Structures are given as C-alpha cells and as structure tokens.
Amino acid sequence: MTDSVSKLSSPRDWDLKWAEVFDKYQADLRHAYYIRALKCRNERSLLEIAAGSFRDMAALNRMRVNCSGADFSPEAVSLAKERFPALASQMFEMDAFRFNFPDQAFDLTYHNGFWGLFSDEEIDQLAREQARVTRGRMIATVHNAHNTSFKEYFDRVVETDPLFNIRFFHKDEIASIMSRHCKRVRVIPVGKAKKGYEDTLIRLGLGQRMFLKTCFALSGQRLLERSERLLCIGEL
Image 1 (tube, rainbow, N blue to C red):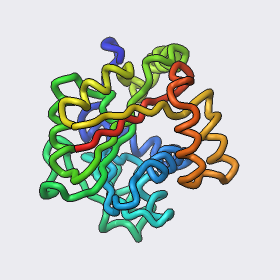
Image 2 (tube, rainbow, N blue to C red):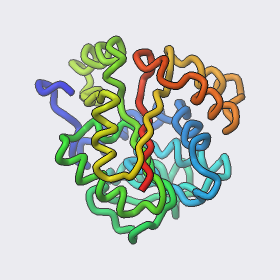
Image 3 (cartoon, helix red, strand yellow):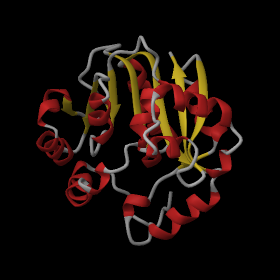
Image 4 (cartoon, rainbow, N blue to C red):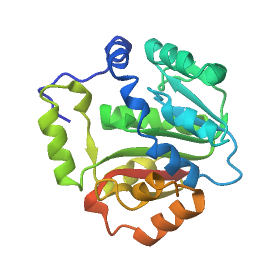
C-alpha cells in the first residue's frame, strides 16, 4: 500500500468509484468459481463481505449456491439491485465492522481484496466481526506479496488510480492474522501464472468443483510466487 496516494476509505469515496467502474468489474468471475470449488457441501448459506460489484454473489446464485452480499457503499448496493433485481432481497448496505446480522448467521463468509485497505488493528476488528456472523469457516482472499511483478504493477498504476492502493500480504502474515480468530488455517495461492492453471479450466468451461479442487491439490504451493492472490480459509 502506498502512503503517498490517497486511499479509498469512506462510503462517499466508494460511491464515486463504483459509479465509474461497476460495469467493468462484472467480467471477472474467477473468485466465484474458487468459492464454489472450496466450499463444503454442508455450507448452504454464504455471505460475500464488501461485495462491491456483487458479481461473485450473483454468479454463485446462478450456480445454485445460496449467497447474500453486503457492502457499505449505498451506490454499490443500489447499482447491484438494479443489475440483479431477483437477488435484491439478499443484498445489504452494511458496515463490515458492525453487521446487523445475528451470531452465526452464515455457514461460510468470504471477501476478496477487502483487507488490503486496512491496518493490522483494523483487520483484527474486521476478522472478529466476520467470525461472529460465521458458523463454520471464513475466507479472506488477499493480494500476494510473494508475486513481486504483480505488486510492482500495482505500485506503478496507483499513481493515477487510488483503486490500486492495496496492501499485499505474505503467506505467513495472512495465516498469522487468521490464526488469531480461527482454530485451523489453510492458504491456497490462486490466479496462477497470469490466469493459467485453475483459471484456464474456468475459461475452457471446466470450472466445476471436482476439476478446480484437483487443480488446487496438485499445484499446492509450487506457484506461490506466480499467483495473484492468497485465499486463506479459517475454521472456527
């Protein structure tokens, strides 16, 4: 994360940004496929935190996975309800620091890139609240600091677009954060080799659960330094 560039932090900041990029962000559905592949069969109620474009929760529902979404940006929620009217009742305007959901409301909760906007202290608060509303497992997907070329790209682009002012994490770092709130933690590198491996399967129409789980198992940590993100699964 670059201190010299202003960070998108307030609902107003994100209202303006989502009005600009909402449609563009509908295209990349890879994370929805990752979530479907990695969720357990008994995890029937999901929540996407900081849903933003709401693309992944919408894609999961198209895959017949019951998923709700929450974001603190009124504009993001409004645009999502317009784009996906059938899912409007599952979209919520909420602050991830203080959800209005009851304890253990969802079997599985997840977010993608969200924690990259916050300090360690803030992430602990967010993780604690995520754990509160989660019954079984929570997922945090973050940008991968082991991929130096990917990080350098963000460092260049951030000078003209604060959307890229994102914190990158090392594997041990994100695992340590999650371990403070979870009994067991597993980190899976995803987005390997410039959209190769599991992303190639998705692109070829082979993104079913069995194929992606096999791909994750076979590739393991071998492509850590060539993966875009780290998908961290914590068992509560």
